[in-house]
Image (cartoon, rainbow, N blue to C red):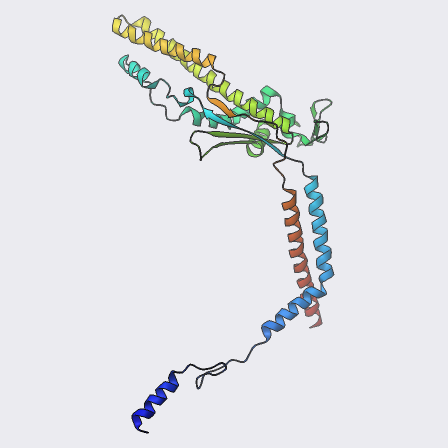
Length: 335
């Protein structure tokens, strides 16, 4: 065999991949470590030894979570879908009225915020909610309701806070404070826990108004009241603004002798009179109800099943932690 044939045979042999368990020369094969298996067996051993601790602690947490979830009152959600009216989509004086005002030398300015956005902000404002609670006398229903009796349909109050028989607040407070909740307290509760006003992103211009309460009847009733009150508030605001404008225009009219200017002032006064008439004639002034609120028959919260699952899971984690700490303490003590 020639030298070329021998070199080709060597190249063929070197190109053959190594079989199972075969390695190149000088290749270091680390010894098979059994520490992972030993640690895993030891881990399961520790869990098995503390199985009764794990079962007991997990069971206690599971039972406690069940009792806790059952102690929570049902929260009901009533909601309505609203749409802006033509008045809400208008821009105050409008282009025609603004042009007439410019001819008369009156600067009406530009409305920076549309009436829909303004009405939504007013609906969630501190002053509006304060007026709502005082007008409808619902402070005990905001701050003192413990639960709703489904059988009788009556509200059950927390008598450590409020006495429904005497209509007195009996909660314990600092000497400098009044037992009756302040507007700062109940407005914050109302804003954060009871009221939701959102624009529907899927349909331009639609607004979802929702109220959360322990009584489904109260939730539905408050939705209707809120819609009525915000419409009345915006109506009153625009009527007062129109009356102030009319008073100013009539003053300017009396001060001018130019016939052309008088015609402009008469037109402006006519427009303001029309605004007042339309505002008084339409109950749904800013928001019209597309889908009215109904008394909910199913609770919105709490999710008792989720509470039980989370409570049981936390109990299992805590029990494992206790078992491992206990085993570590015993090991350190022996050493």
